[in-house]
Image 1 (cartoon, helix red, strand yellow):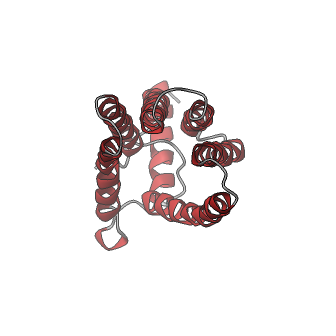
Image 2 (cartoon, rainbow, N blue to C red; image 1 turned 135 degrees about the horizontal axis):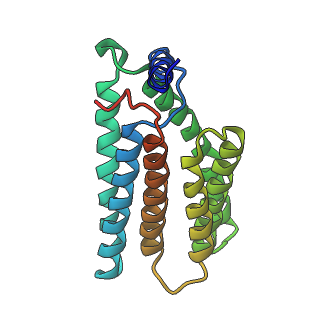
Amino acid sequence: MTEYNLKQVKADLYTIRNAAGIGEGPTRHDLTGNALIALAGLIVAGWAMFSHGVWQIWGLGAVLLPVGYLIGLRVRHRKASGGSPQVRREFAAAGSVLSLAVPFVAYALWAQRMRIPPMLVLATTVFFVGMLMLSGVIARPRQPELAPWCLALMLGALMIPSTSFSPVIVIGFMLTAGGFASACVVGIRLRQGAPDDFSS
């Protein structure tokens, strides 16, 4: 069997796996989503650097860029329109992860009652989120694009209470670092030959 035939068979196998919703390789929407998060992070950090006080928080509105993209992606891949089962499965998994917000909210309320400094609460919460993501990376080593997010969140959490920068600026840098590094990993994996079946 020639090298061309081997590549064609590999591509066909990827297509079958992804059509069945069992593919785990990165897709172009992963690349675009991470790039938009990095762009949003730059906007957040830039806005916070040139504003003061409550005005810095308005820069977080840039997060609507990747959020809007994800909403559009979910609509395009809904079951009724014959979209990708893998994309729907990823959104279902993300929705279940959101349930983790409940203990974090409880932790924040407890910390407020115990008069723990809000900056410390924010830092520990972000660090724990990074730790949880790290356990997911270890459990699913086929998704190395999540590793940069673990590092960005945990390092950012350590920076929040130990730097003179505003927490909003640090959050912007975390989004930029995590999004850019993860997009690079996805781009490398795509160039190595993982077919992109969900580019629409």
